[in-house]
Image: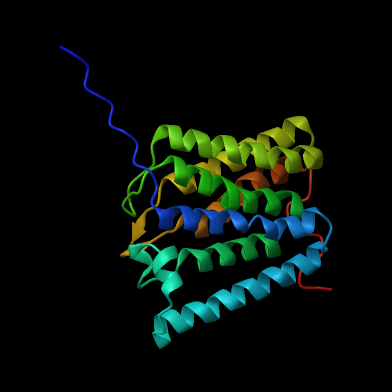
Length: 222
């Protein structure tokens, strides 16, 4: 009996490609700090401003009811009546920036801005509560590990930093691959990836005492 033909992988739609490009463009935010354009304190202020702007835009969209065509392009069906992914993206990055040290917060952010778009493009369009395929999860883990090692290994050493990077990548992969629906609300991976990754890495660093976990100076202080 001849083997069954392998079904072709559906190509992402034009709107999905646009969404992923916008997603990846957020990498420019942590690069402001990495490249030395702003201090960690100033970067915290930048993220607070971004989150405040996103909150206002979502209030206008969901409460006032103003409709913009760009939302039709860049939001999914389940986001039409819920807070959109771009706002959750800003809120989660702001949260890890305000709480964690740069060596933890920056890679956690890059896992969202780079890892999630890569896994999204390798995967196919799914329902909100449908899990991703193993090969997509493997790609997500690989990207997350690659973006975390350059920050965590210098901060904590090869052994502990490597373990923290693996823990963070695993956490981000789980958050990316499994998107539960609680009380009718989708727990979006834009909200969950950075904090899960940061907590995973931070736990390893805290247990070993190899590197600071939280920011030594609150980012909102000039």
